[in-house]
Length: 561
Image 1 (cartoon, rainbow, N blue to C red):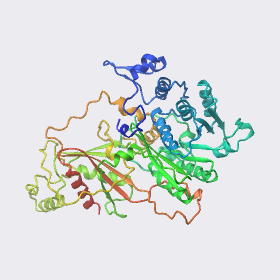
Image 2: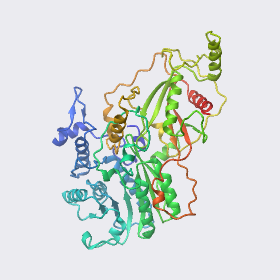
Image 3: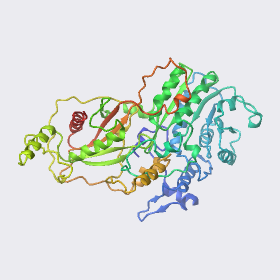
């Protein structure tokens, strides 16, 4: 799996995936949903909630001795990704100067599975206080706690919507059932819903291309598990404001964000609240990445460094170009418009262009390009010669003889792919080196490649694809098991000159004054929307000429005016 090398080093699933064959042999409930092919490989359907529930149930029972039932109309958690969060908390708590004999943790929104308290209590004997708004989730969580006889370590409290979880624990109501509230919490954790409403969840607020690959997994999440007023930024902002009130009674506050674009607004909010110590930690599994955000009012606490951050410092960053504020060739200054322009431009250069689903963020995609010949060097001169020759009714002379290249084709006349690769000409331009510590795009492994085709019924296709994309828990497993029998695409006989992944993102500007205004809740709804400059990033993935990636970026830079 593409991101497994960035998993927490103590996560047992980093190097060894669970054996579906063993699960089918041991557990009838897993055997009932799995299938075995002619070669003895056991698989499940990642689009079926019952199959994902059986997988999570088997992992918990086999590896942790936990018996957990998952309602099929509620979110089914991916165990290795949840375990990453627990391991991260372990590292943070170890950094406390004074270790308490009993570790107390609050989990805000335990869900139907009560997964974090069960893992933390079983693995570390931590005392957990969990809150839950939904009555069905609360009842299911209580049953899972009682089924595993962990009532002495896990207390689940039902609270009203918009009520403060910290207030519910430190100042419990009589009906809460919490007899002795804790004097101090070592950590607070939360995994908030990603979206602010249905239109955000299905993508009607953003126009994204339907040519990207369709999602491979489903979502069983209830509406309140995937959507919350104001989205995850507003949700976490309320926790941040509560954290000021309980600054001396809680060691560290943590949240797991689903959108990279939420990190900058949250850091801005914490600065406004004068929080002295903030850290970002990347949590990875399979093709899923989440961003852990931790803050504390203990200035001396040192936060751990993620494997992603540590390893990325040793790797070469992708090539990067930041667009100017206005670009004449783009009808709109948006990620979608730039993607469409890039896709068309690469096809004009006789490149093979494939839409690939992003693994760095929730939703989105990137372009995988490959070329067997150099068609971008001296492209302007070749276009002018072609135009002059066309005006005189003559065939254009090949200006690429000295470079071993041919003129870029017109859209309605594309040359075949059986060209002999040409040597990569030297470039006098320096390679850009703009690093981004939280950008993992260069390491994303490409999925099985399928040429992009737009469906005929665009509105229906858009809604279906985007709805399926919500909270794709199965994506954490999909690549590892779905592609075991897949054969890689055979390269052309002449070989590739260059293969690269092309990413586009719109940066969230972090330039607002952090001290001039108070935190306004209504003003911060939608704060996570990107509003900064567009950035193109090119990551070389293969081919005989690495320098070609830099030349392509320079070509795009000259064209984007």
